[in-house]
Image (cartoon, rainbow over all chains, first blue to last red):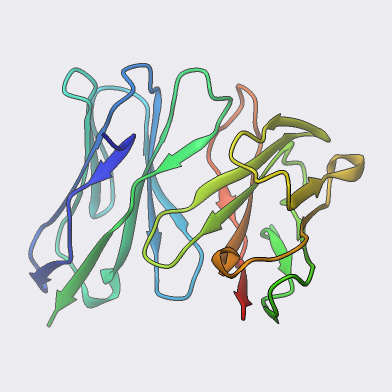
Length: 112
Length: 115
C-alpha cells in the first residue's frame, strides 16, 4: 500500500463545474495535509493546507479532512481552464519533523 | 519577499560525470529540503536540513549523492558519479520549520538529464 495515494487521472471537467480531487494516506499518525498545484514544467505551488478534521475554504478551493477515514480531498468550484494542472497531495507524518510524503499527483484538465 | 533560488535551471551530463546544484532558501527559513521528482511522479525527499544539521537523509543514495548546508543558509547537492536513472528535476524547498510552520515553498528546480 502506498503511503499517499491519489485518485488516478487524468480528470477532465467542463469550465464552471466542480472538480473533486481525492487522497488517502496510510499512517494514522499523520498530522498535516497539503495540496500543491504544479503546472507543466514548473515547481509545486502550495494552495491549501489543513490540520483539523472538517472543511477549510479559501476562495474557490475547499479542503476536506477526515482523519477517521484517512482521507483528504480538494474541491475546486467554478473550475477555470487556468486550473488545469497536476494536483499533488502531501502528508506530514506524526514524527517526521516536517518531511512531506507526496502522492503521485492527479492531472486535472478544465475544458472550455 | 524573494522566493527560493536554484541554479542551474538545466543541466545535461554524461553518465559517470559529476554535477552540483545550488539552493538559496527564503530568508529566515530554518529548514531546507532537497527533493527528486521523476517525470510523472510526486517529489521524493532526499534530504532535510534544520539550520545546518541533517534531520532526515534516509532516502539519499549516499554512495553517490551528498549534500551540505554551510552556515545554515545556502545548500549544495552533488551527484558523483551520475547514473541514467538520476535524470529528474531536483527541487529545493524551505520552510520556517520546527513548530512554527511546516508549509514548504519550492524553488524553480534544476532539470537534470543524464545521457
